[in-house]
Length: 596
Image (cartoon, rainbow, N blue to C red):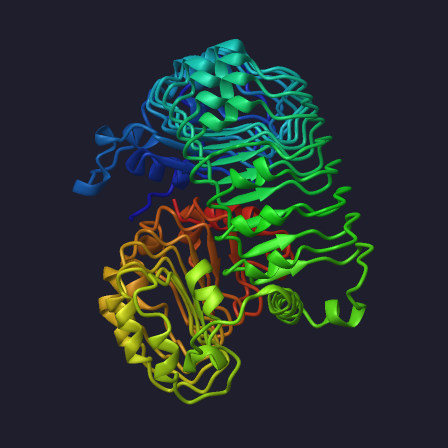
């Protein structure tokens, strides 16, 4: 873009107002903004917004007054209306009512300033899609903001808000609302009218209750109410049919809410006052994969814990549990069980220290002992009984042949699974170099497969298992994934840590159902953020300990990510201090680096 030198600082309002000191905005930036419609003034030490910014699309630009012949690309009269104004990380204490002179704005970023109030004329910016106001000193929100009918994202975290306008319910297109880290004691019931909401953050406030109307938010996927003063959760929340992640940490809850939300995957209820877990509460959690109950006062686990067939991680650290039900070992997908800080009887500390696998094995042994004491002898002994747990196959639909260091899986193992509609297979910790071909016999029912800790260099046949939702291929010798894997239309989670990938597997970009991709400890050199953004359900991405020399700023636009692991890569930015702050900080930093 060609640039012209200014003859001087031409101020089109020089004769109409008393000049006052203001941090200058480079002429070139304003000129470029007239063409692009975007102006980034973040981090410039501004204490107020210069008047020529507000009047950018009104006043005649300086070059119009210069005796210069303009080329085709420099015709100032063909300027573009300003649609994106970034003013974050300044020292702004005031926003002028003249903000109304920029009616075409779709993005207004004012986060990380010193604003204690906002002009009512904000309500005139009817094209606004994103309004970022976090990290200011706002004690109230002007009612006029609630008339921004097109607003999609409203972020107000880290302010001093004590109330929210009742009219907030008029923001019918809002998909993201962040009110965290404020001083709110209650929410207006009108929030139940925000029918488009998908992400709601209310953490770090002083809420003692939630409005019943929250249950009307049928599209919310994430609700964060951590660090409040909640003593219970309204039963109406069962109406949040799309809810996938529920954060209730650090409240005053005495019982786990009974929420039959069919999509609920992750529940974080640590640091409360829970004492009892009841069968009714657990039976509701039919799709939960992660249940965090640490730092409570739970005394017992009911046998019904075995109903949580999808559970992969259970955190019971620092409770009052003295005994464990043996049925805990029947959970087919449980990978992590945390029990430190409980007064357990009959389980040696060194057994706990060995980890989840050994503990579950011990509990399964207890079930076996009980069964041997009561079971009637069978008339016929199957040859597979020494190799296969037939109880697990019939009852849990789980086929196990793991930790055998075997080069192949015996036919007897598959024979025992015939006509049993097996849904889960664990052949991990063997010496398999090829995909067991008889796994294809289970294609109509198999949803979860674990082939980790083997020696596989190819897994083409896995593409025929169309029902798969979880794949674990960690610690193998894979360098790529077959392109046909894009046809696994139900796949939600794939674990590929400790393989030999040098690039992000092409097939994964095309599996739109993916929620979790684990690629740590490979040699991945880059990712394509524009294609990752198309994975709208992706919430966890592990790229730790790879060969990333740079992190593309556009990765910050992957707003569905809740957990992004980048540590252990050779890139220089973002710095380690930012990476250590966690996913939100990294994504915010990356967004700030996107060229405008």
